[in-house]
Amino acid sequence: MVSTEKQEEQKIWKLLEQVSDPEVPVLSVNDLGIIRKVEIINGEVIITITPTYSGCPAMDTINMDIRLKLIEHGYKNITFHSILSPAWTTDWMSEEGKRKLLEYGIAPPQYQSDKKGMKEENIECPQCHSHNTKLLSQFGSTACKALYQCYDCKEPFDYFKCH
Amino acid sequence: MDNSNVEMNQLLNYTLHLADTNLILAQRNGECCAYGPILEQDIAITNITLDLLGQARNFYQYAALITGNTATEDSLAYLRTEREYKNLLITEIPNIDWAQIVLRQFFYSVYQYEVFKHLQTGADTQLAAIAEKSIKETTYHVKWSSEWVIRLGDGTTESFEKINKALQNIWQYTGEFFIPADYEKNFIDYSTIKEKWISKIKIVLEEATLKVPENIFMQTGGKTGIHTEHMGFILSDMQYLQRTYPGAEW
Image (cartoon, rainbow over all chains, first blue to last red; front, top):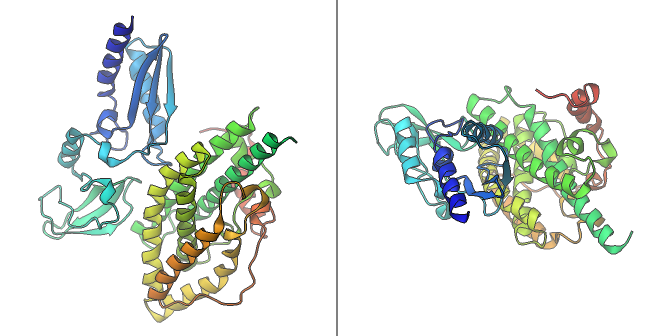
């Protein structure tokens, strides 16, 4: 019994790889590191999620997308728990996720979050890979991103800031 | 009421105070949407607003849990009367100009940062969790607003005049930050928070060539529901839809 539940949980983790962040569709919810726990207790699927930003409008959509994906694969009884502590950090983003971000044209977080307070400067341009870049705005197209510009190729780009 | 009821009531009121302050400032800042001085700053102030609103939601959800019965985050945010709101007065004042908007954000964000730092290690684990989450966002708000205060204060004659005028206008609303309402005393000790707030804002104001106003009468009342004349207008804007079409969703 226990082992089947474990296997089911593994299957759900696999399915979650197919659920993407609606604002950064190249990242799965696993890449983002927001899924803290997947459990099956007496046939009920319990998914524990930690939000990225308090006001992130994507969170409700993400819950809905996960629910739909699981329903599609025959799971019916699904509950979400939101957990605030420990707070989500970009350190939990997978290396795979960071690579995908860069390919997509968004500079991935550059430092470990405990180094925060240090200036996020010389961020690598995702287009031409120059480090000769400047911050245009601390706040970009979504709460999790800042807006930078490259001095060399002149392209503006989004940077997924350390959090 | 027995002791545990009194304590629950204090926790509820304090949580609502935190929620309301964020909500009303979010409502005010939200007025900037599509009116920011340039596109990047329009996006910045609305992103900050989104953070404030998200934090408010976490506090309202907790308050709804404490209240029980049919209370929800929405009923608490939208369906109370003016005297029931416990937000700080500074959040109610009209936007007037960019100087007033960024200075208000600066005073509040530095304050919020210190309050969250305090709550993070507090006895109430849910308030601690919300604070732990929120402080990461507030750190960015402090940074952004500090830079704007310096930029305007140490900018042109006109920008200095505008932010100095905002300072003379807003300062009177900062006194109540540190005066605890009865319901707050179990959760927070403002003596060290006040010291840290003053020393932090002085560093920025000095760099902005601004002087802290002296001998100014300090307004109070927000924490206990006595609001400025602006509050009713904010609420009528904010509550109109839910009061006219109860339960409307889109």
